[in-house]
Amino acid sequence: MTDLHRLSIRELSEGLAGSKFSSRELTEHYLKRIEKIDAQVQSYVTVTPEQALAQADAADALRKSGMANVLTGVPVAHKDIFCTQGIKTTAGSKMLDNFISPYDATVVAKGKVAGLVTLGKVNMDEFAMGSTSESSYFGATKNPWALDHVPGGSSGGSAAAVAADLAPFATGTDTGGSIRQPASFCGLTGLKPTYGRVSRFGMIAYASSLDQGGPMARSAEDCAYLMNVMAGHDERDSTSVNVDADDYVANLNATSVKGLRIGIPKQYFNVAGLDADVKARVEESLKKLEDMGATLVEINLNMTDAYVPTYYLIAPAEASSNLQRFDGVRYGYRCENPVDLTDLYKRSRSEGFGPEVQRRILIGTYALSAGYYDAYYVKAQKVRRLIQQDFLKAFESVDVIAAPSAPTTAYKIGASLDPVEMYLGDIYTIAVNLAGLPAINAPVGFDKDQLPVGLQLIGNYWSESQLLSVVHQYQQATDWHTKRAAIAEETV
Image (cartoon, rainbow, N blue to C red; front, side, top):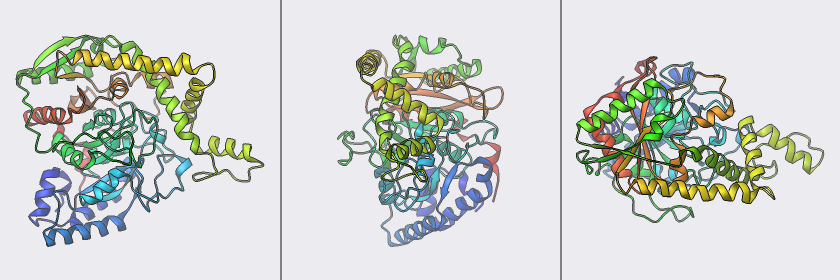
């Protein structure tokens, strides 16, 4: 079958269960697509054909024995921030270019239990620091909708792989928008769960109080299938919360759009730099939801001016702490012929880390240094609590909050945005991570250049089922999520 890549996760599951095709046939189909198409997209860092086919054969055997799960034999791509036993795990960095993980991240291990077939590891901004996937040591990933544009970041490889139909779904991580923004740029659905919902064990840390794994796919339904695998308490992760996870697939129609109160923060739609096409598509999607029975309620979020400075104190501070372990001594990159220990540290880190990672380490180290810790880091944590309280007050009168996922569509590769301009592009996403809330991106149309636009819906704690359900119903009434880039239409 030449069109297996066009099937939804439910259709793939049903096709495997009904013996319309085998997992080996499905896996070979995706591996052929990767071999033919990915040179243009550069979404994969590592492809694992031998392991993938072995897993596919094992999945087929389970199917024959009647012991298969719903997803047994379905392929997946993992962001290269998740440790994978026996496979190189780089976090997009020269620092880890030689690191073969001795264990699986919990997300990967759960995928194996569910019978998922790992196609390989996909590209990302180095140590998840960036919004374009250009800071990767392995080169920039391209946006399948326009190969001279970025796919977003840091989960740009995950987004590009799914948008080019080089994987049916993919894992991503979101520290300040790194699932939602690339999903927006690539016309996908992407869910950032409540902090603590998905285990961080084996997920290479950027900012420990902000990082959260989540699914990326074409539709809310596809995301729900992967979320059923990823979610749940993990005693190996001290930040994992012992709250029962839902059956996200079963709950896809549990929340009715009729009577749903959608908060519209007036501050979000008056941000300098909000593209006119993005604003128009988001407003059109909200009008559609209103036509479906939702109520739009104007609300105030009064802490918006504090989002960027607060995030860019806390995230780099935590990054500087997490990345101190990469010192050239224990594992990872080591400089050649160091003259002494100080030289080993300095050259290993300056040669192993790229410019954006070095920039954030320096910012974070400064914010945590003696004399500045209270003035910067502690104050930022206090403001973080005020941001959380601002959201909780809003949720007293609304069920979800709507916003663009990004102020613009995808940037051109190499666009001369300075770091501060790039950081300001995170205005709509970073507050969700600071507050630990769940949020989802849904594709809602295109700009004048036919680049995808995304709507972001933000929920209260543990409301992933509600967000997936609302987007699922929107997608039942629209077809934006079914649109495909030209490169995805290529056959093999």
